Length: 336
Image 1 (cartoon, rainbow, N blue to C red):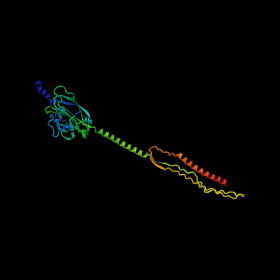
Image 2: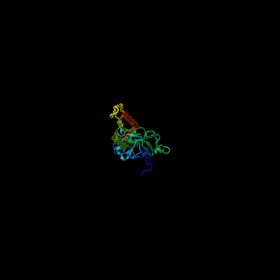
Image 3: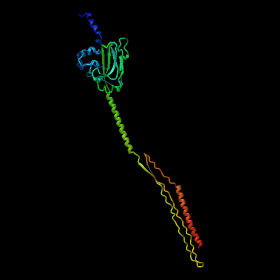
Image 4: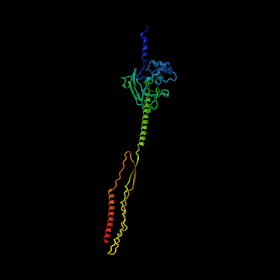
């Protein structure tokens, strides 16, 4: 029968930090051990992580050469289910729930790590969150340590990294004050490259549509160009009044009279100058006007008053001429 005294060493061993662990990330899902990890780091390391999920890397030794414990405790992406990969975007706000099982204090930080560079990986940008005394030994655990809140780097900092699953992780690192025990917890993340591609396609499609619209509008504009209309202002053709009567001479033959001697009376020669009517034809002003789309044809107003005055002058001249003719006839008759 086992005595109670024999159980004392076992109880003391159970209180060692390496046995009970110290902290555990409860959300989101972190990397877990699998066959690829066991092959890369060895059975001792695999068993240590399987038995103590919240343990430190020092208890996983010795390891197989090439196993990198300072990156996610050596656990590999090949062993992780695809459902554990978080799709994220630059400047996304995130949080991590932590259970401090055995507080012992010490520095800690959260960072986005590029795992493709080999070794322990490379931090993208700078630390996303830092603590001087994480899971302190005295007092209550601060709220911002049980629920870590942080923001991912911007797009310019991330660049083309983290585009494929397995390339990047968000890693919580924690060490004891003397740095003799070190803890690593990793969450797989991938940048939402597919959404950016979709947005690019939409922008490209919108650009093509806008370009096509511009071409159609330009084509319609070319088709609907206003016709060139030649507008001519034509002056009316004015005919001078036909006053072309010219009397060179008027001779009146007297009838022979038996008693008095025959008297020949020569009527005076009346030379009537034919009035010259000078009608000035206004210059034809042809103005080429491009109208789009309303055609405005200017009407030309003929100065009727001027035409009436010209016709009146011509009438006066004709009346004077007729008067001279009548007067000559009367005078000839009287003399006769």
